[in-house]
Amino acid sequence: MAVGRNEDAADAAGTLIGAGALFEGTLETERDLSVDGMLRGARVKTQGVLVVGPEGRVEAADIEVGEATIRGRLSGRLSARRCVRIEAGAHVSGAVIAPRLVLHEGAICRADKSA
Image 1 (cartoon, rainbow, N blue to C red):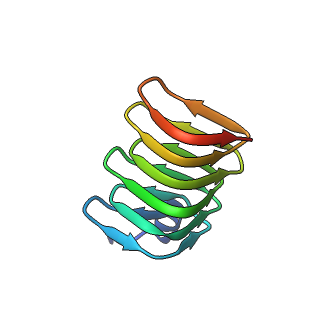
Image 2 (cartoon, rainbow, N blue to C red):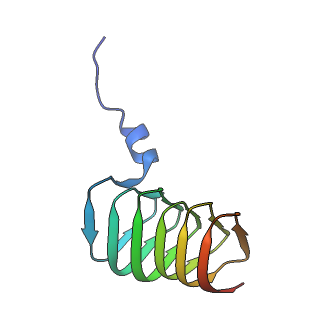
């Protein structure tokens, strides 16, 4: 049996900015985006889900997502088409625009919130 790369699985996984990695600039993707490192730029856009891990940081002026789960730090104007979840231990500052916002106990949110 040959061991090879499964292209469909790789495509479904989306984009990962791993621990210790730094990405600076504009990032746009149609896939899900996971940030365990540092993402800094003027614009971040994904049609899918943005997940900021516990050690992850996102600093961007404009962040547009389908939905977001924040466990780490996020700074900027976050706009979601569906839902934003800010979990315990997360730090969010800026503006949050979403039809649904879930703020867990222990999360820090210093943001303007609107639908």
